Image (cartoon, rainbow, N blue to C red; front, side, top):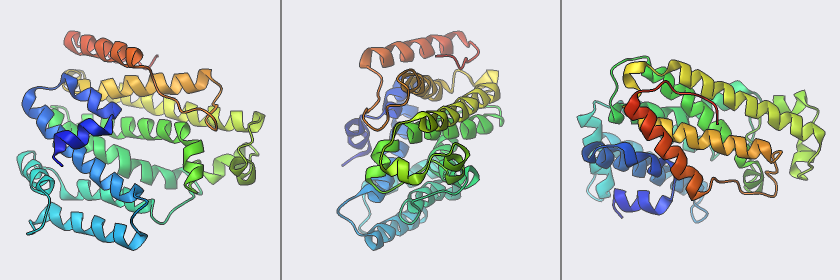
Length: 282
């Protein structure tokens, strides 16, 4: 399966953001996204044992640095990207390390521990992506880090119920304790005032990172970062939808409508064309 097919079948918000790119950069970011998708699918596979997952992820680490006889075409395409954009092997390996964390870690005691995970599975993706998008101001790297944290925390909020089914709790244990909401209550999907306060706290944290990202985006890179800004707008809208619905994450699967996504994409493309300053409102 080639990179374009992997990206198309994923039906991801990230794939929608590529609409703003020229043909060459779109092709290259599609290859990188396909790599991320394949790595993530290894970690999520119900057909593979943990040992098999670790072996496949280790093989991808090797393929990033040197070719193998039986490697998939995607591996060669990713190495081409590494050479073309002078990408750091370590940064791509951070993404693999993030997926590996899911193989052994089911709980996070503190947000600082969770932040490491979010950095690896989201901010590292952003740091590679901006190299492909093209930027001029090194401060854009901080933008990628902050936006990655905002997007991943929004994912965690949205997927609380889904993650429980997989035995995972990403909400930091210290946050549950802060709002007197026990893991037992969470496992029982108890929806009460303590849960609402906990989720409002997490949403405020996500919004703070969205604000930090907006503040960190250099003016000369706003047009180049149009794909990232499309993602930011879609996820801000998703977070707002969840908040307005009072965090019914145990029973609802939140997503923006196609019309709302199209509206946000069009708005961000216009802002990019006019080089307008990003806003963090809905």
